[in-house]
Amino acid sequence: SEDNLVNAACTSANIETIHGKAACKGLCQKRACCFVEGGAYCNAGFSKNYCEEYIACNVLPEYSEVTAVGKKDLVDAACTSANIQTSEGEETCKQMCTLRACCFVEGGKFCNVDFGPEYCEEFEACKNLPF
Image (cartoon, rainbow, N blue to C red; front, side, top):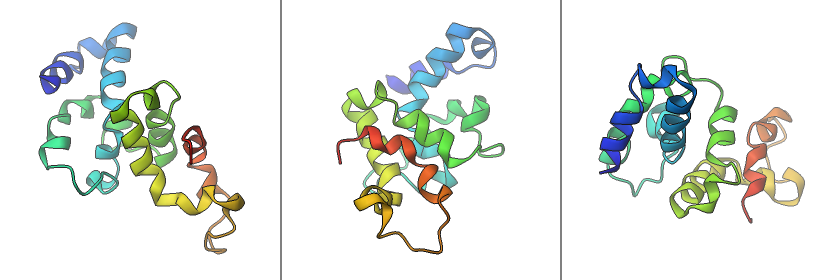
């Protein structure tokens, strides 16, 4: 099953190699929403197991809640043009991008004016989606 693949690919020993790290990252990108604010950005329809199956991704610094990098890096990872070629990848990207949907309608004019320009810049990769 897919979680077995993640468990195998995302061991601390495996991610020491370039290929091992790439394999782990590639699998984890599919569920990037799980690693931001405890899965708050995942579609509510997903079961609790959806994120638990990918717990091994925590071995990667960018997917560790403790050292969580900015949302931008996760959105960039989830919304690569390659990742959104798969239906699961596109769904993850969409879920994360709906948080800032105002940024992609008429140049962001519907976003709250109190948000700085970085509010939309963080989610720049969402432009890869066909809105």
